[in-house]
Image (cartoon, rainbow, N blue to C red):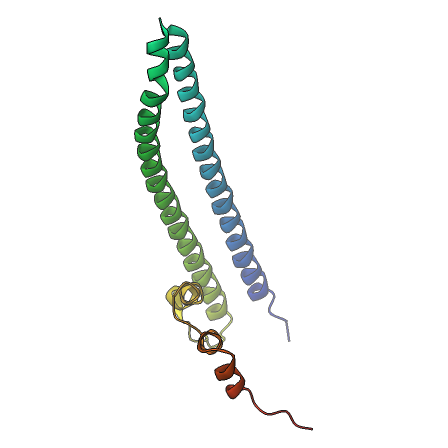
Amino acid sequence: MIPDTKTPLALYKANLDLALRVGRLLSEHRRQWARQGLARVDEAVNRTLRESERALAAGDWEQLSKLPGDGFWASIQADADALQASTDAALAQQSSFANGLQEAVDAWQAACGEAIREAGVALPTTTGFEDFLKVFTTATRTEVPPAAAATKAGPAAAAAKKPARRK
């Protein structure tokens, strides 16, 4: 009997491809966050330079005294616009990352399924990507776990629920 070497190799390749795709996604995601952070730093530096130039151009004390107030309101507007742009960019980046991750997992599942089918082995039932993500979405729910509910009810309620110790 000749051992099947194609199936383990195909599964190994599928796993390696998944790892490489996820690595590329993480690397690109990191680069996007770094670019966004650098853009915010550049905006802050440019704003500081503009304010400094305005201070140098002030002809008298009265103009100079108006700069902090004018700068404050201008920075509030600039910060609000920049915050909205950052939020929009972060949501787009996260959505892109999630889509790329889903595509990578889908390709991995297809490659593994094909390797298993070629080996003539019965496929296990798959739960799909949505069930995989439930692990993460249930962690973000605001439901109070039973242990936390007991502590909110007070020490007496928590003590009443504890099983008696055996001696």
